Length: 266
Length: 267
Image (tube, rainbow over all chains, first blue to last red; front, side, top):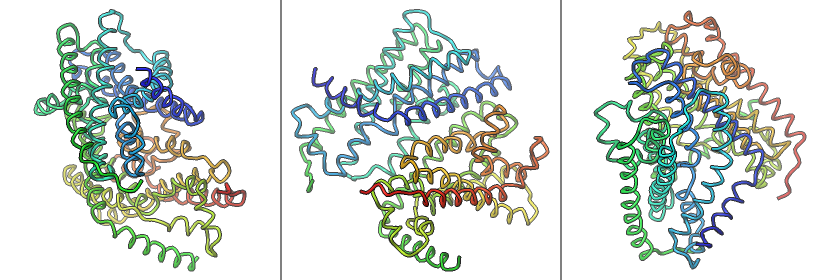
């Protein structure tokens, strides 16, 4: 376990090295938050009845937090981009030679950078947003607990999705074309921008069939109070099921690739 | 000027031939671009199928706005995508190679590469603009199609010039990536898919004056969609090419200023 922390800490240091980048990134996050804030305000003013009983502060909370957890549940950069880079450079061998399980090692790296981003890119803008906008605060301990668990499980689920996506690069060396598809799919099907209850009925079965609903929609809808009591528990258990399922599949696929892996040069 | 043009065209030809070596990449990249944009448009579709309009803009009007942006962005991506990488060229010393050759550094830098992903943007945006034209039941006079071409080129110049202006600061600071990324957020995060009139005055002014990305699609679209009388700033719709030229002038001035003060990183 202590090895896990060593890898995590290393990743933390790497991420916190550039200060100007940090401030510009915060500014960028605040701009995106303002854009979604304005978007939902305009839409709510136009047709409040289309929100199906969800209040404006609840909606703003969902949208702002959706933007913010986007910076810790990241599809643009993560374990997949790391694997791809290492495979391409032929340096993946150094990762494989380490006397640590590869998946555990990758998870530790990802955890470190996630915590860094949580501390620097999620908490400060969230505090600013609470000062600026009218947003809901979950008060019941059960809801807070539900949110924390949901967020943790969401991170694990996305980690395994990213991990398996990154494994493609062992076959193709490059993720370029695929990554656009993956990025677009996660963005659309996870409910990060638009809450999934607003999607047309025809799409609902597809959304339920994909793990991405568990990544953004579940923690966000628990936080803003749309998923309560029994529906919250169902959503959390669905997440757990996805987590275990994806873990098993990732292990199987990785085992196969690892056994037949030939690294050229280096 | 004429000599520069010849050099530029020769370089572009070489760059195109290099790119054509990798066909599989090309096809995969184009498909990727289609899906990426389809994803963004699908989100707008979900929103607008529920809310009918966004600050008075219908779904197909948003599609038009989005693809007007994508067309300009695509043209600029084909020819000038690599200007974002000036910082890297400077740090790695690649830029010093350019300086040793007896031709204008800016021309050499701009002509260095072409990028096929932009081709996907251009194809998709033209197709979507045609779809939007039909779905909106538009009926333009003939000259409007000519104006569309002018606007497409001026959008490309607007985006290219703002980027060039900002990356030129890396001659002085060697770091500009974060600055360019934050600025381009006003492009793909704001003007790309949202009608600028829905935002407050501050943001509206930023994308009109400070980082005038709104001239890529929003202002020109007002006339194409017959909306120039709906907003008090409708007259700005005609000024996009002028803005593009001014920005180009500023960008080249900044480039010249920067390159005079440039000191190699030594690597």
